[in-house]
Length: 386
Image (cartoon, rainbow, N blue to C red; front, side, top):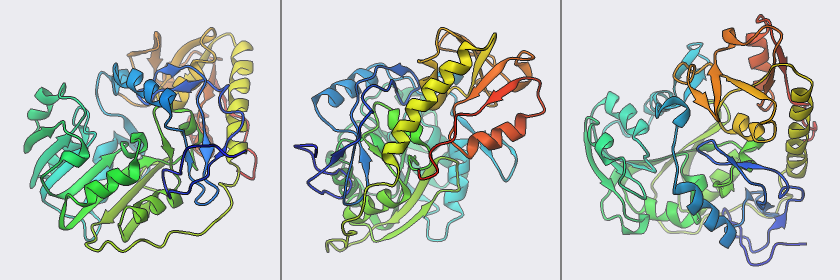
């Protein structure tokens, strides 16, 4: 039975289909705290976009989450470090993004930059290191103004809505912001209107198609695939779009250039829903059951990571959980959910560590750590059709 009263937030199609078995799942916030079950999930039968329903419950929940939002609290506010394959070491995510972005032909190298959802300024600091930028941020509040003002080249923090912006920019960035917006198409159209001639928009969002754990993030409205993010940008009026999935694992990075014309984009015709979306939700239920079974049979049980997936699983195995395991040097030695965060080398001999990661990332981590004297448990493989 179709979902009544909601249109697709990506392509605008008037009918959405519910994804069954999602509401009993526990959820997690994007700042990595366990969150109660009871969410909704739907898929568009036209463009295959997976999305929550922006009803009164969802709007109330995001207000609850954002009222006490504390990004990167596991590392005391220091940006998340990611495993950078070319250098075989952990590096700040924004540093990796900016380097890749500045290496692309046609990307503005200097000028006025606006970071939408700038938070405590990690992206702005990465651009400041490059030099040549007049930096602006946009947030729903001004609580980080003091720290932002200390960034070289920082000019202003805008706390207005996107529609109220009056200035124009050479480059606008949305790093893990678009998936939170209640009306992403309108927001992108408004930002397109704020690009100077030849300007570009850079977006990064989670790749839900490669990482089903994104579906349980309570404050994410849209759960993008490389195909659906491109559909959305086309609908918003962008015509020149480049999509990358290899800059950072589990992430989609997109660069889109402004276009002066207002001709309606040619959106894809009707298609079948995302292959395996129901199987992916079923797999998430299986992951919880597998983690609980593993934890119950262990004398010393930990979770690998301290971000979205590990925090989500932690909510279901809290009575067994002793520690989190991290490779991020800024998290090791700290505490998450009242449990210590330790390095792989500090894991007790014979302990069980559950890898709350999607394949093939879980397999690559296991291969990297297989020399250590503890047991690594991978989630049961998803259905091969997912």
